Amino acid sequence: MPAAEALFRGLPALEAALGDVAERLRRVTVQVLAGGRSAGAGVVWRRRGLVITNAHVAAAPRAEVVLADGRAVAARVTARDPRRDLAMLTVSADDLEPALRVDARGLRPGELLVALGHPLGVANAVALGLVHRAPSGAPAPGGWLHADVRLAPGNSGGPLADVAGRIAGINAMIVGGLGIAVPTHVIEQFVQEVVGGGRGGARAA
Amino acid sequence: MPAPSNDGPLAALSSDLAAAVEAAGRSVVAIHARRRIPASGVVWQPGVVVATHHTIQRDEDITVALHDGTTAPATLVGRDPSTDLTVLRLGDAAGAAAAPAAFTTDAPRVGQLALALGRPGTAVTASLGIVSAVGGEWRTWQGGTIDRFVRLDVSVYDGFSGGPLVDAAGRVAGINTSGLARAVALTVPASTVARVAGQLLERGHVARGWLGIATQPVRLPPGLQRSAGTGAGAGLVVVHVEPDSPADRGGVLLGDILLALDDRPLSDPGDVLAALGGDRIGTPVALRVARGGRAEMLTVTVGERPRARR
Image (cartoon, rainbow over all chains, first blue to last red; front, top):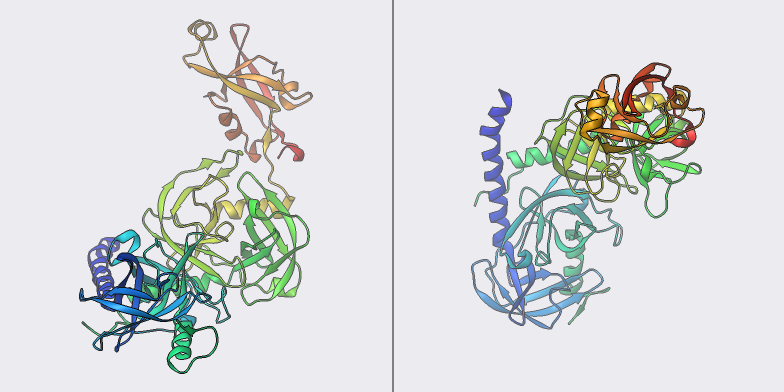
């Protein structure tokens, strides 16, 4: 019976592949603490201590970050842009594994997505979903990545990735049950504005 | 850690899902017929769009946006609230050129992947779940007959109703709606959509049988069961008879207790509705009633439900 074959051959391979993606994401995801309490997640953007999270996760000038290897390090909020809900954290480390990225504008509706975060305090919880609507390339709100994925508070700032483990965006909010993520190209622009001299809405905090 | 994989089973599944969305998405349209956000619909045959009744909130001034961004005026062909379906006809050449869906009437299997598509705007949207329950023919609370019960475990977002249920091969298996059961995602299967759409295109409405009575369930006391010669513990008491209706002409009186219709026992008003499909119009039904403590047989010729009563 073909169905039985699929059951015994296909599913373990799928599960193993999903496990690989989750592990890849775990290694580039941090926990952001504010005042000693978990405020959300973040994604390592550059090896030398550059971490991206949501502006609403990093509301104060300083935060603490728990890296994937368990180290807790102090972080400075070096830039915030509430309009795009992005914040840049700088930690004193030069050996971080940066996230691989993919341009979310190239995603097709129906493609699978994997989210990692710390929803309701559960560390490194994985959620599987798919592209509900790809970002149009227009400014927000058309420019957000809409995902059919079950998120909760604590997913904020965490990665939303394709099945190769490449970050397509960071989860920012839940609207009508949909997961809404800031797409990678918007984050790159934000980072360029801050690190590459700065223009537009991003400013040093 | 191995290099990121673009050709593993997960990537293959992801790519297949996106391909199914792309294939079926060409027949998914946005219908501007309500405030706030457009409703979803499916091009069912050339120039004909099927949508859900409850999301098409006006009968005139309707435009449809196709997958390629072109828009076409549309006219309302007819509605069947009992199955929550509405049929629209596309007005011009752009509409006639719209790609109809490739659909399947195969019975979905519990556990199979279920893609729910919509177009609540310019872009097609996709949600993934599984078929959570499949059953036989069922009747909606408005009396519509749906060939197969299909319940989905899928999140319901804007644009869900009127959009298609798509299988892994990109074929449309039916029209999704959250309007037939509160907060439950159901699919009206393709066979029912085809039947209802055919009737709406032919006549502008779905004909339903009609007796012209209102009933309420009642328990039958043992004495009445004995005297009426029935073993059934319940029947339907007639609380209204429409003047000059089929039931009136057939001799049904206020206060009669209906026991059986064509030898099928009656205990719920829905049992009468279920026996009154459009194919029964003009044919006689045998009603067994308890009247004055005795059983009597009446013959009523089924009429067509007047349009205003739909």
